[in-house]
Each structure stands twice: as structure tokens, then as C-alpha cells.
Amino acid sequence: MAIDITLPSLSAGMEDAVIAKWLVAAGDPISRGQPIAEVETDKATMELEAEADGILGRIDIADGQRANVGQVIAVVLADGETLPVAGASRAATAATAAAPLSTGRKHAASPLARRLAAEAGLDLQGVTGSGPRGRIVKLDVQRLLAATPAPVAAPAPAVQPQPQAVPPGIGPHEARPLSNMRRTIARRLVEAKTSIPHFYLSVDCELDALLALRAQVNEGRDKAERISINDFVIKAAARALRKVPAANVIWNGDEILQLSDIDISVAVATDGGLITPILRGADRMSLGTLSAEMKALAARAHQGELRPEEYQGGGFSVSNLGMYGIQTFSAIINPPQSCILAVGASLRRPVGRGDQIVLADVMSVTLSVDHRSVDGALGAQVLAAFKNNIENPMSLLI
Image (cartoon, one colour):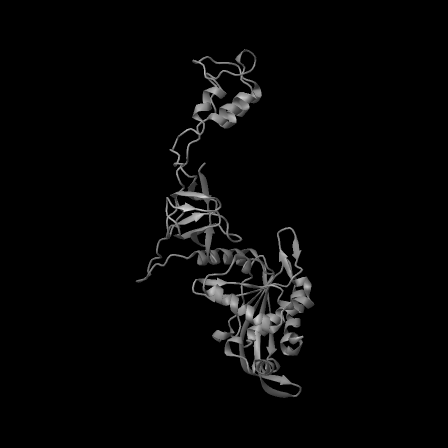
């Protein structure tokens, strides 16, 4: 029996994807678990595996075409089986045996049989029932339905976005189609900015103690294994949530989900767009483990090799643009999370210490908060705990 291969949902919120490349051709034998296609989702390129043994009888979505989740993209046949012909009956030989047709004579039908036939669009004219005096009953309708030819629907065309008209006055340009990732980023950010009541809290953190500790920690380490300022930032955010667990929550419509684990999503800029791999249980990691895991996740993100479980979920996000010299910015919340921390560059600035003005390395951070799930005072507590962790970095080594 022919088996349809439909495009599965490979990540949360996935609506469609591009069939980047078929790894087998029509007519090739395939086995269960065998990779048969590469699918480009909004986050990564993944392999699609066969769910049954057989012959790949037909490919409906060619390389480079887009398909919706649930859409048929190919058909698998058993050995010796051929593709069904459009309009062919699934049980042509059983039709008259199950419900004999007369030569135009009309018989009475029970109310239930008439209702079932009407719902199925069946015409009972000329049908001889199995009830008394040829009365058509429920069983007759069910048999007729089982024997009715089922037309094979033509493959639905892949959904291709229609380009908008170029605004007037625009000069020479190149039109670049949106990638899956860019389309998803655009949709999610519009949704987040228009539906989440953001508010923002900012604070300055002095880094002199952290920079001195970092220099000690990295002494003798290979360059690839050195602890970054961002590693300290992630650990400080995770420890802040441990101290203020009421902010480690997810907005879920008519309820708020209190998370047990502290999983930090970290924004990574790739050629295709922004992706947020997750450090799970970040508060329990040592700085060395956290740093190594973050480097590995970032490398897989750049290569498009993250697994869904490595970027789906998370309860709190960190976005750091300090390496680009950005002093302050406000990030858009990553739904359904409640907070995201925007981290700026470390700059040498004058600060007051007692009666003196001295120069110190200072980093500005801004916490974007969903007011539906986290109130202002609670957000302030998280930011205060974060600042204390950054300015007393020895606590992050314990």
C-alpha cells in the first residue's frame, strides 16, 4: 500500500520548510531510519529519515522548493507496487457486493442512513438496502462508503511567497529572497513587540574585579579555552535567577509556568540570522564547563547543525553586543520567555568612590521584561542580584 511522506514539524512553531536536497531519487529502495532528504528549517538544516521500508515511488516537492508542515512531499511504495491512478477505486470489486445497485428503483431509507449519506455526499437513488423490503439502513451506507472510489488528490503546490511591489523612488537594487530563518525571525519579533508589554530596567556594573579575576583564571590556558566576559555574564544571570526564582517563569496565556531548572538562551549571530542555543542548568555549571559548552553550541550554530533540543525552550535570554562597541541597547523578548538581558561594551568611565572620582571599567546592561508575568520590583531584584554577582565575581567560582 502506498504511504505518503509528509513534512513533519521539526521545531516549535515551524509552519513550513525548504526541501534543500533529496538524498535519494524516485525508484530507489529506502529503509526505515535512512536519511532521505535534507530539510532547511528556520533554525538549521536537518536530515529527514524514512519511516518505512519500500521504494521511493514519487517526489512531489523538488530540491529548493518550500512545503507546508503536513504537506505530502513524496510517496513510498511496497516492492512490486505501482503508483495509484487518479480516480481509481480502492475497492472496485467490492462495490456491488457490499451494496447492490438496482435499475433505478428507489427504496426507503432509515433517518440515520439518510443523515449519514447526506454528510458523506452519497446519492441513495437506486440503492437496494439490506433491511426489510429493501430498506436502506446504517450498515448499507457504511458498506457503500467503504466501496466508494477515493480519488487521489493531486500534490498540493509548494507555497511560494509572493514578492511585494517595489516602493516608488527606490534606485538600483538586488532583491534577495528571505531565508527560512529570516522569515521566522521577522514573524516572531513582530509578534513579540506587538503582543508583549515590554518595560526596561538598566544598571551599570563595575568590572575591575571581574577583569582581574578573569586574567588570573585564564593564565596558562590555551586561547581556545579562555573564559570570556560573556561567560561570566551568563553565569551571573543564572545565579541571579537562582536567587530570584520568581522571575524564572514563562507566560502561557491563562497561566504562568514556574520553571524548576535555570536554562539560559544565548543569542548567537550567524550568517542566516540570530539563533539562541541553550545552556541547560547554567547555574550548576562551573565557569570552565559553561565556557566550553557555549563555544561548542556557537560553533554548531554557525554550521547550521544545532539539534532542536539545543535551541528550543529556555527560560531567560542573554544578548551581548559589547564586542561591537555598543554601549546600551534594549532587546526584544524571546517569547514565551519573560526576560532578556541586553549587554553593552565595557568602557573606562569616571565613577564616584566615596569622596573621590576615579576611572573604572563599567558595563551597562538593560533588562527587557514582560509585565504580564514579571512586575517592576521583581525585575529590579533580578538586576540587582546580577550586578552584585558581576561586581563580586569570586562568588561565581563557588
